[in-house]
Amino acid sequence: PSYRLKDNSRVRLRLINAANARVFDLKFTSVKPRTIALDGYPVNPFESPDLTIGPSQRVDVILDLSGKSPEFALQIITRTRPINIARFLLDKSLGQGGGALNEELITPIRPQPPKASSTSLKIPVHMQGGAMGNLKSAKLNGIMTPLRDLAQKHRKVWAFNGAVGGYDHMLGTARRGQFVILDIQNDTRWPHAMHLHGHHFWVNSRLNPVKDPLSKRDTYLMQPGENAEFRFVADNPGLWLFHCHMLEHHAAGMGAVIQVT
Image 1 (cartoon, rainbow, N blue to C red):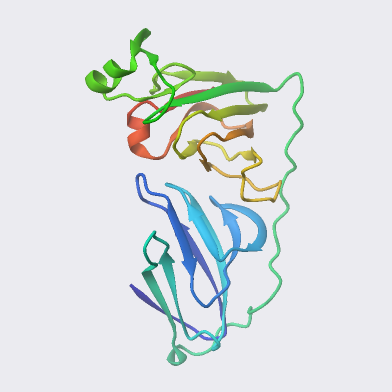
Image 2 (cartoon, one colour):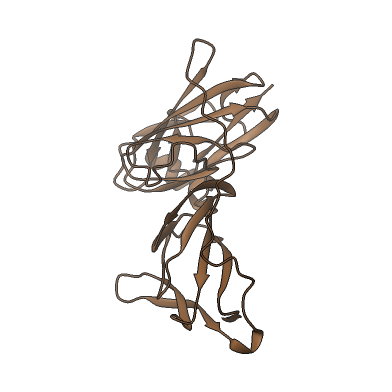
């Protein structure tokens, strides 16, 4: 599709990965986008010519437009060549923009993450399975089952903490207001877009590409072999799904529930 925009204007775009499994590497041509929010949560603005977005992740960017770049595109980067997925044209017939061009971007005040203490709840999450993985067997409905039977008879190939995940697989229970740390080990050969319902979380990982310590996500793309902590205040009572948003992974066992009482 093509979009007509005013010259001398500031535009905010929200990019949403609505694919069920694919990770998109995106790039704007001729303009310099500045990321201002991730998964709907504000982040200190930073220039981001290349954007990697996992399933269900959202990225908000600001574009300051001028006649220097009368036409630009949003591309998907592939192994062979970039593919244009959207074109943007500055149309003088629409008039001039409203004057916000190049104004300073202000980040809202955001809370500091609490420090872990004796009252914090740490929940280990050992992710295993998939092709070229080290999962030999896992519990399914309480019965330890070899991986071959899991795959061939039940179409399950992923596990959390040695058990095939599902809506009845409880990872842990937190009190309302308790500081929770999900201590996650991606012990697989695959990336996973890990999504927590009901909460945003701070990410503590040396592989986190976002260096703003106050930024939060509700979906984080974990790399193969990555260890990360998802830290959040359990302030939303309920039963909350924690799962991989690559939905084939979810359906094949990579999901569980965290309760907040």
